[in-house]
Structure formats: structure tokens, C-alpha cells
Amino acid sequence: DIQMTQSPSTLSASVGDRVTITCRASESVSTWLAWYQQKPGKAPNLLIHTASNVESGVPSRFSGSGSGTEFTLTISSLQPVDFATYYCQQYYSPQATFGQGTKLEIK
Amino acid sequence: QVQLVQSGSELKKPGASVKVSCKASGYTFTNYPMNWVRQAPGQGLEWMGWINTNTGNPTYAQGFTGRFVFSLDTSVSTAYLQISSLKAEDTAVYYCAREVVVEPAPYGWFDPWGQGTLVTVSS
Image (cartoon, rainbow over all chains, first blue to last red; front, side, top):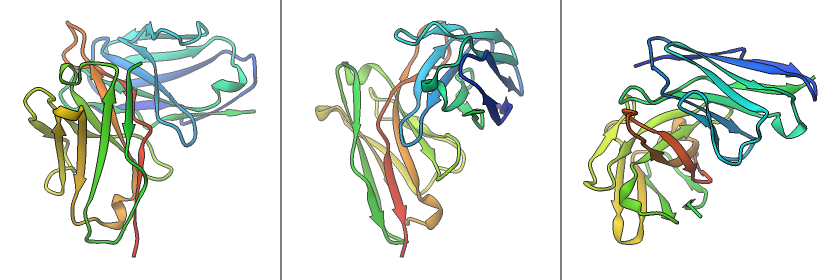
């Protein structure tokens, strides 16, 4: 299976900060990567697919980039509603795999 | 709107079985594969596998063979997850998620997700 590793596991930041979360794949997944946001007690919500395509309705402060084995999710100016856990997921292989998650906390 | 609505929380004893339902609406059910994802308490997301909603053919991830069964009732646009011989370590929230495949991608991303079903296994 393709292993997905996110860093950092926890990130403390303030409202207005620019933050970046990294996701690395154990082998190339081309651009077949998605990002999800999950808030406590809720289902994950799709933010970005195909590495950089922002889903309709997602605020423009979210962006994604990367290809091959290294990807980033950037939030340009953190808002209070953005404090949540973020997961990457590859859909290159028949066995989908998720990163372990990055918890974004208020500093 | 596209929506997946899952059945409610379940409390089961070890050794029992449980069947979780996932009812789809707002789209043609058989046009999209359905996936299942597990989230143990305080843990991350773990892909369990998927079912072809056209053929009913299931594919299970490693670690989810034997006691886990995916099934469908296309007449009511509903997917099911059945877990037998429940163990304490099966305690988790189980999500269904529609897979969106857009060529040339080999597989797809998950959108939307059901609201999740908490299965608690305790004596």
C-alpha cells in the first residue's frame, strides 16, 4: 500500500496566520490527491481534489499544490472556523490511503 | 442536493452482529462507487473498501476481510455494512462516502460523506 505521511501532526497558529500542511507519499501518486477538513463530531468534508482543484463553495483562502510524492495545503489567512483536523488521501492506487491527520489548533 | 444519510448509533455486545445503512439521494445511485471508512475513537481515517454499485461486487482492504460485508439494495439507493462477531476493537464511527471518479484519474475522491454511525461494542 502507498503510505501517506503528514507533517506536522499538530500545528498551533493564530487567526490571520498563513499556514502550510505537508503530505508526502511513499511513491508517486501523480496529482491524484485530495484534502479533507474534519471538525469534531462531524464527517470529513472535501476541500481540494486533483492536488490543486478547490471544491466549489470552499473559501479561496484554501489552496493546494504538488505532484508526485510531495503536496501542500495552504490556508492564506486563518479564520476561527478553520481550526480543525486536515487529512490528505491518495486515489492513485486501488487501495485508497489517508494521511494520519494534522490537527490545527488555536495558539 | 447530493446526500448520504446513515442509520443511527448502535450498542452491541461482543460476538453480536450489526448492519449499518447508508441511503443516497440527489443522484443516480448506480453511477458512483460507494466506499466505507472507519474512524476509531481519537484516531484517523482508515479506508475499509468499496462496493461497485452497478455489479454489487465488493472489494475489501487488508484487515477488513472475513467479518465485514458490503451489500446494496439498489431499489432504495442504499448501501449496507454488516460486521459480524463484533469485538471491542470494532468500536468506531463508520462512514460511507461516494467516490467521484473523473477521467483520466484511476480512482476517485470521496464526496459527500454520510454523517457517520457510531458502533459501540461493550459487554
